Length: 148
Image (cartoon, rainbow, N blue to C red; front, side, top):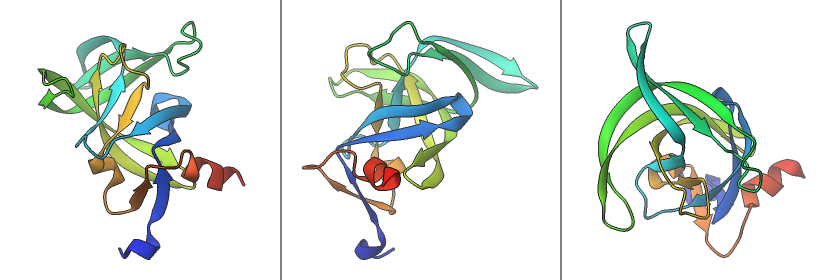
């Protein structure tokens, strides 16, 4: 894909994770993070139809913690991830469709405790891939483009 063919996104965007029941989630675009990460609570590993899966809770609205969505997903991997503070932890990885503007594509997301962070999700390099360019001076470019 040539640079002119790529959608430009800002340092903050609004996405949807339809299979997880999330329609609007503010994410921080982080080109320094390889994999996207999502803040979740109450992670429980279990078997679903013979496949290792996880159950977890999300509070998608950081301003309304009483709103809770309970989710289930198949585990696609378990990885050792080094966080921005240098601590390494083992995280479950799920693969789920993500909607940004008028496009949908599957992304990998690690599940972790981001309670001390300002945004519930980091949108990392692998999800950005070769389809997006980031303008760090802007916010909600893809989200506003879709609403117009």
